Length: 128
Ligand SMILES: [Zn+2]
Image (tube, rainbow, N blue to C red):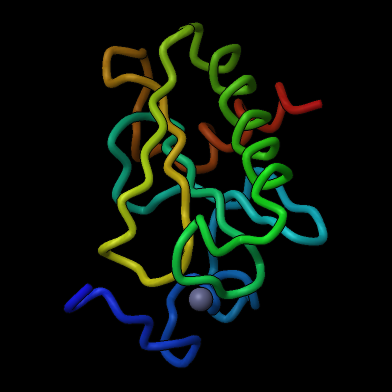
């Protein structure tokens, strides 16, 4: 598809977040995946779940089942953290050329979406 090519890792903002070169507010991390708060949140606790390895699309991630298990963990934690069943999930992929899944509560939940430290702590408190 035109305009949807992968410029690669060089200059990839999510690779820099994975490496720690760019700071982020992390909510979950394991050997293969990282979940951190989006700096332009749609709602309190808006999380980006990314593979640590650079893949262009979520469909390129070989262990995609494990990837979605991580997204599920985040969604389940957000349900409790923000007292809602309604968690939105989205993957468009046009803004950043590194696979990412948005997991975020609906915008009617209480709280300040710019309170990154507080929202991350709320989510982490409900992760297994
Ligand atoms: Zn990347």
